[in-house]
Length: 169
Image (cartoon, rainbow, N blue to C red):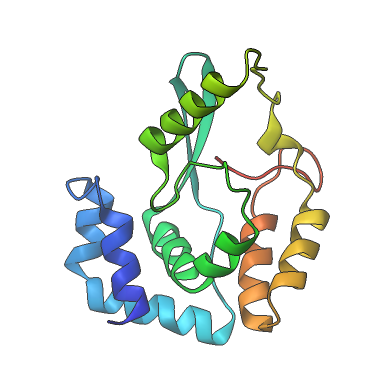
């Protein structure tokens, strides 16, 4: 199926009743054609964020992309997923097919049976410290398609906590 249409169905998962998703779906063909045109012309619009707080267990500020951008993100991941998967650390479990909470729990149980000690840590404000320059260089090493790289760079540059640093979560 069409990558953008598949991306729409993935992006709407779990939020199909939200007003922004319903509005996008009501004009699905027009919206997907517009996104396709933006990608082809290099005029992709990104950076429409909505901020809110969650408490899990500590307070975190979440930066959510507009739904139309989420469709773009899913379309990019449909293309790039396998490249990212190849360089991913084995014991990374979030947002990965065949991994997830239960796989992480099983792996943790393996480790606790094997080792008497463990270290629990959290890197403070990790996503706020990611350098745009470093992230872009890593993407340039992985991908050679200039249009794809330009889209990634627009997304990265659309958000910063400090000059040249920070990615939204």
